[in-house]
Amino acid sequence: MKNYITLLLSFFMVAPLFAQDNMTVPLIEVEGFSEKKIAPDEATFQINLEEKAMKVTDAVAVINKKTQLLADALKKAKIKDYKLIADNYSVDVNRVYRGGTQRDSGYVARQSLRVVTNSKNEDLQKIVESIQGSGDMSFNLNFRISEATQKSLEDELLTAALRNAESRAQLIAQTLGIKSIRVHRVTLESQPVAFAYAKMEMMRTSADAASAPPLLNPDEQSLQKRVYVKYTY
Image (cartoon, rainbow, N blue to C red; front, side):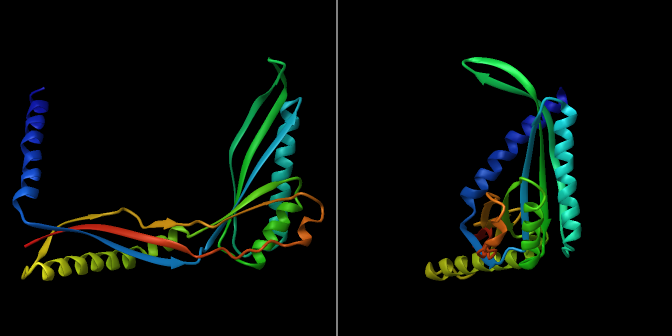
């Protein structure tokens, strides 16, 4: 209890010092910004499977069969680089509501599948064809900048944002006749921010859907970085 009171008192003693610091130290506060536009290098196919049956085993069997058919089709297509990820598996009672009453009618099994790839163009079309050939499946296709690429650009974006902040601070100082400035405090964002994810939605509506291949040319996306710098003089 004594240690808790000591820590609490320490907090109340330190907090005013930060406030006083901002009031007594002359500051120039600026935001530094950097941006880089880059083509997305990762595509994710999101597939949601659902099957209803009177028995759990029957519903699960159909879901498992569709998943295996897709896995086999992707392997047969000899795609250079991809990952098939299965998650969010569930089996629930299928409750039907009619005329204000509820009754149970068998079971519903659900499974989420994701096909993630760094390949482009021809291999993307092979994945589309593999999904369409594996049963009655609908899917969403999302393009994004991969985490690996974002991390590789982190230093470049941070350097550009800091230089932008310095340029703004120098401009303010020169305009106001301040001879020299120095860094007082820097606040960083943890990761670069990606904007404008390109998204394409596709659904198999007929047996000849593959006759009109989709356009797979997503727009560039923007990686942005912000820093907040306080200069003193």
